[in-house]
Amino acid sequence: MSERSGVSAFSGFLVGAAVGAVVALLVAPATGADTRRRLGETTRHLKEGASGKIEQVRNTFRDGAKQVKNAVSEGREEYRRSTQDQLETSARSPGL
Image (cartoon, rainbow, N blue to C red):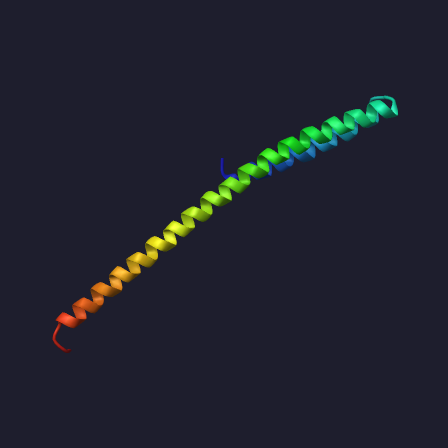
């Protein structure tokens, strides 16, 4: 599963959980204190799940940034070598 579809699936999960929590609160009769307690628990669980996913996304971006940085450095080094090779070849060749 790609990271994008993982984020999308997690977003769907959060929306589904929120809708489910609202429906549960509307259909299940409970006292105000009980409803507030349940709402707090649901919010806390959603926050914990989101925090974990956010950390995963951060790590993915960090890894991607490192890969891009390495690729740019390798490309730059290859360009330098290629340019140096061309200059050396030009210097050795008689004038055209």
